[in-house]
Length: 414
Ligand SMILES: [Zn+2]
Image (cartoon, rainbow, N blue to C red; front, top):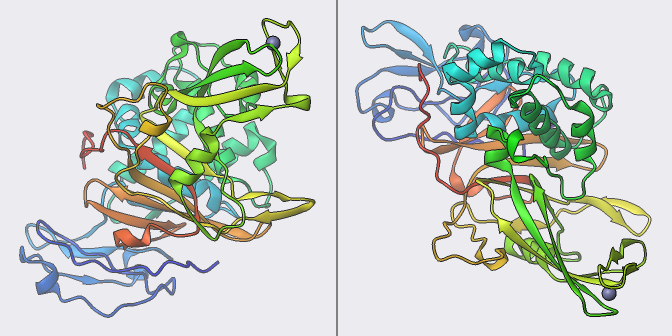
């Protein structure tokens, strides 16, 4: 499916050793040749090359002269296309977002963690780390790699993904986080059954005990607080629930809203009745209950899923509302249980986009690179640098924010 974003070529300031050109083999828009002199103030010469000449059937890349004038192919570390193994764009988009999560990348590519994983049965983490190595530390002349082994592994563990139907990217994201969490736990015992059960939780949590803490839970897990009021006896009760992905409702009958509107809708007071009644400790039976939700512990990585797919009466539909979101100043203070002056704003670093309809669509990803301080659009094997304002679009489906701005990854060979 055609990409709705227009890939832009960016001429970047110093230091620069390469610029990015589109592949002539994959029919991406060609914006005209860039001037090597203008693009490379440092004096490094280069030219946009058809990908066939770089040994690829599709994708993007550049060829530049190295330090001794030797020609070599380069791409930015961490910026690598993914081959589509048959309607697997949903997986590719999710993987690109995880590949751009710098603290997770650093953790998994540390020598200690790699040697730990090599000693025990950790199939998903093992394949994931192998892909990370290719994307971050692999040969720069290879413009894309294949996640086929991951696709086969996920399909074997979860047969619902073993077909050519369109899948939900946020379900796969949660599944991958669950699987990575299971593999990273310091236990020989595996917990596939518990993982499957966790998938059914309404707020989608990994629900780990402290002993089960992993890099996945430390980064992605937050905690919600529920203040409940029995509408019969006015008795109060309280509970907490961990979460990994917040599924946010989108205001209906509006073509445009803000992300804050969606968050306000999620956190607004609600009344649980009929089958949703809660057990009142005072009455001893289920009662109509008023619930006030707040965030007790904001996560380091905040994953927001916009609920675009749903039902309107008996009709299934996709909401195409343009949800306006901030790239660098998402403030959760209004929704925290204990608002804090020290709370820092969240910065957006990755987006999963969905174009198309309910049954026929296409997933792509937009990810920010700390190495180039720029955004890239990942459409399977096709990768292009895009200007910041193109990150905002009505196609946004999953937003990944970081509480701490990412720094340059501290990993070897980048
Ligand atoms: Zn009561």
